[in-house]
Image (cartoon, rainbow, N blue to C red; front, side, top):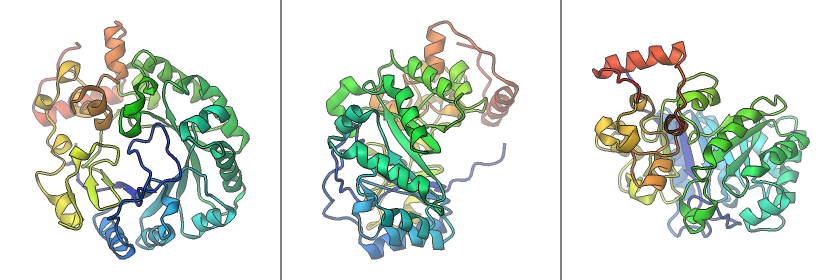
Amino acid sequence: MSEFKLYPQAVVWEITFACNMRCLHCGTAAGKQRPDELTTEEALSLADELCDLGAVNITLSGGEPLMRKDWSLLAQRITDRGARPYIITNGYSVTEETVDTFAKVGMRNVGVSFDGTKKTHNYIRQRDESYDRVLNAFRMMAAHPELNQFCAMSQISNINLDEMDEIRDILVDVGCPQWRIQMTTATGRMKEHGELVMSLDNYPRFIDKILELKEDKRIDIDVGENIGYFGCKGTALLDGHPYWGCFAGTRGIGIESNGDIKGCLSMPEEFVEGNVRDRSLTEIWNDPDAFAYNRKFTRDSAGGFCHDCKYLPMCRAGCATTAVSASGSRGDNPYCIYRIEHEQGIACRDNELITNLLSSVYEQIGEKLPVEQ
């Protein structure tokens, strides 16, 4: 295996904390604009620095990013510098003019949050008009001749797990080409609604449903990074390809609207590595002690089932945010379908690709491949 290069390939940038909704599952509990958000000049300079560091995909997020008046200037700067701008919006304030601007600034993908049937979506979003407005946004984008790509983004929890077939049918009906399915975690506002967080009992059923939906070729299913991992169903979710773990701080970076830097925007505040007003992003990124939870992850970093798992050097206990929110530990992740299958006595033989990669990884780190648990 070649040496792994550290660079912020994928960026999720909370350009404002302001939001016109108060969604129950919001991982940051967004609402009011931070008093110290980056100015336009600071944000444009940061966009340049991200591109200089090698950023490829830069997603403008929030809060609700459309509530920041200069969002299109930031997107245009990203395009001009040769990176790919993306945006995630709740769709509430999307108009024909907004869609035209998406196309004009070279938006490579527009993600629009969509969480269920009308009653469920409006309940989660805490705004009665939300459902109708988001469907209108989908229809406008589907009809636009120059918009590159758009997708629906769903946070699946106990409350909308049984609506996934209906969600799929609604999205197909409005012409949505892609559906990104993510799993809620006990972060942000969801800490106040623990009963809604995907339960471990429901988790295998959730994965079964995704595998079923992937057979429907009317819409492309994009599986979120915090779902699956190895084992029978985890490997099937990725069409036989390996899961390479959380890339926070190694190939991914999260930026808060005041310039705080994390490996991933979803991670709790204790994972802030610094602020761009105190040190440049380049200095933070190149700090040898930064993002240690991933950059310096070893078997000793893991606990519980993960510690002795043969896949640990590849998956590194999966999604860091999910692990921390579920167990309080970066290295112990109960939301692993391989772990659940193992506990149920279900065993699968690795395909040739994963077998060869495992052998190569263990040779590289100088460990002996452990026997099955």
